[in-house]
Every structure is written in structure tokens, then in C-alpha cells.
Image 1: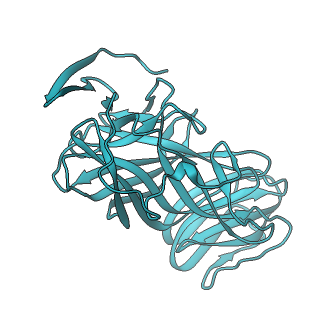
Image 2 (image 1 turned 45 degrees about the vertical axis):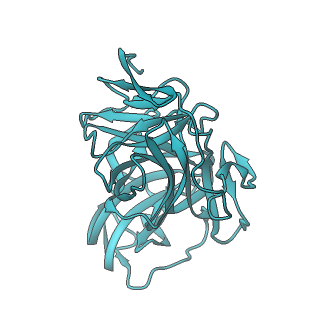
Image 3 (image 1 turned 90 degrees about the vertical axis):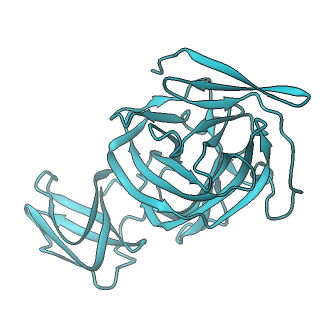
Length: 335
């Protein structure tokens, strides 16, 4: 549970009005209670994501999804007029903020784009890079021991000025294209992952990730302070503003398909060890039983790997292998 700590507020005065910024000497530094002044006209390139049409279940949008093939899909949590923000940048290096993403049941998700509203202290500045980390879930918080993928110093693909918040911050709609990253789902149940963004601005000043109390998709946002092993909730019914998108693929069982060029595995059947080999680095391996339940999930990052299957019960399984963002499906037998 989140520990409520003393917030020390100070006031910054400008001509004609005063603006309050609330900071925390302890966990969850944030900005709040702002006046919003639009500084750029709204165009087709920076439409509010809350206006996008989507057939959503808790913010999840599946666009043109077919039963048999991959299709574009995304999970979105829209802006609430720059209501709030949580600092997560190199100016405050001890705090990292993350939000969760829910993969629907019976679906694998290949994440390719991370979008967020980020506010920089100052005007005319940009986000020069960000560290983006994807975590597994542990009790409705990021699992620091289970990092699915990490992309340090990632340069934004695009950033569009949205407006001004908290008097001194300019808010940007920032998009990062990432290498296709498999977020494996499971049969009959949703799967939760977490994504953190730790930004660096061109002026090396504060950067906040916009937060909202208007909608919480899945869990409230979370923060990690002083690189602790555990995370805490940002509290107050707040979630982050984001748009995570990529391709959804139904979990297919019963046939072997989508084989990867240059990937081999042996022996099959296997008794204790299954050898995996590929021309390029194997990113991740996920094994499902015939009921579609996930029984094994591991990041590999190597061209060869000895997979210990001794703990698996005797029988047939399906193995999904990710190489260069592509996913191959294989039927394996455990003796």
C-alpha cells in the first residue's frame, strides 16, 4: 500500500496571478492545479487521443482485428486537460514512474510504439531521449526482477507541442517507436505488463509524465524511489496518460505455423533439455500447454540457448519464439 508522506508546497508568483506547484521531499514528486493555455493550434497531427474512435474494454482498442491474422491494436488512457503530472526524468534521478498495460485473454501483443504526454520545465525545449523499460507484473506492481525489454536513451520519433501547464511547463505529445517486443498473453485470462518512461530534456530540467484521475485503466500508476526493488502506487486514483500500440495476434493452438527462418530446436521429444539456435538473437521464449495456459516465459538475448524442460509434465506443448520482433510457433513434446 502507498505510504502517504508529508507534501511541502511552495508558491511561484507570476504577473497577475500565483501558481501552486506541489512537490514531495519523499516519494511521488508531482505537479498539480494548473492553468492550461494553448500555445499551438490543434491540427490533424495533434488531435486529442480521447476523441479517437475505439471499441474499448478499459481503454483497449482493437482495430480491424481478424481471427487468424495480426492486426493493429492499442491501449489508450486519454488526457484530462493536463490535470496532473508525475516527475520521471534525469533531473530527479531517484524517481521512475510506470503504468500498466493489459493484454486481452487469448491474445499476444507485439508492442511497437509508446506515446505519452510529457511536460518540460521551460519553453522551446524538447525530449532528447528516454529510457523505456517493460516489466512483468507482480501483485499489481512492476516486477523489477522480470524485465521483458529495456531501451536506454531512445530518441523520440515525433513530438508535438500541445500547450502550457503549471505556468512554467510546456507539454508535448511524444512518440517513441521501439523494436517490436512480444508481450505474450494467455488463454482465458488477461495478462498485465508495466512500462516506465524516464526522460531527458534538452535543457536537463524537470520532465513530468501527465497523470489523470478521470480514468484508471487497469491499475493506478506506480513509482520506484531510490531504485528500490519494490514499487508503490502513485495514489489518489491517478493513472498516467498514454497510448501504447502494436499488433495483436490470437493465440493459436493445434497447429504449428509462422516458423522463423534460421531457427532450429532439438531434440524433439525432449526429456530434460531443449536446444534452441537461431541466426540472430532469440529474444524471448514462451511455452503453453494444450489448454493455452502459459507454463514458461523467459527472455533469452542469445543465439543459442539450452532450455530446461525437466519440470514440465509429459505431453505436448506449443512454444512461441521471438526473433527480431517476429514470432514463430512450434509444437514440442516432453518425454
